[in-house]
Length: 151
Ligand code: CO
Image (cartoon, rainbow, N blue to C red; front, top):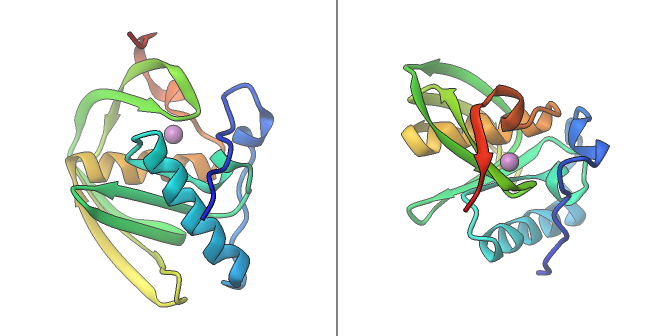
């Protein structure tokens, strides 16, 4: 595993739509391992492939010791509403308030190519939505109100 550089807001890579993964090869497995290590090194709860400069539809969320690794994710259900502070490894100096669902059901592929379905509440639901947005070139600052400097 290796740490990768985090792409910072202002780089147009973060604004592009990521492409579907067509085959899960060794490079994808290495990418997943590196993304997890990189996210943990920054104490993040989520990371998307474009944040390490790879325009593929992949993200990882880790909350309470549970790792959710998703390839070609698709949000299939969302309910509720919660308005809360949000931040991003690619926008290191800012925090802002974003409305997100309180429950999200999402499906995708795991690293073995098997279809998986995950359900998440609160922080997990928020992270699923935040990371999913990255795959479409959307950052939390596009949706946030009360954006302010992180202390
Ligand atoms: Co982010």
